Length: 176
Image 1 (tube, one colour):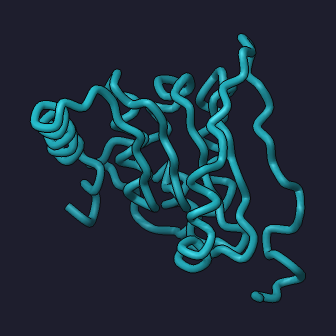
Image 2: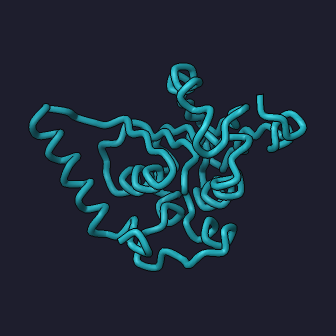
């Protein structure tokens, strides 16, 4: 499964069943889901397939595995669903996507590809996180990041996504 079926329909179905079980056993009516890296792909696909997702947060998220494969010159995950194909379905779910400014694994191009396919992006918030790469810098900042607002504008047309134009390599490449 790791080779090309990480996000295969049967993998997603297992998560769907797990959420259904949680709802049933704990009398839950909705979920606020968070996903990191490939977990962000799964969380996004789930948000696109379910009507009980209250919010979505991704951290260093693989939101378009075809772009990721192209960037890293690796084989496409042909047996997997791609989160970008669910961008329009999740466009109205309150969400925030966190991208590390030093992240070379899932750079902003991955999110940009995703948001371009969303249509109305008024609920898609993005935050570039200083001093964070793909693996480091998240734990220290999570208590602040997790509480950032999930604003949904009332725009009918696609709204521009807030983007920090500062250099993506941080402070002239120096890691503090």
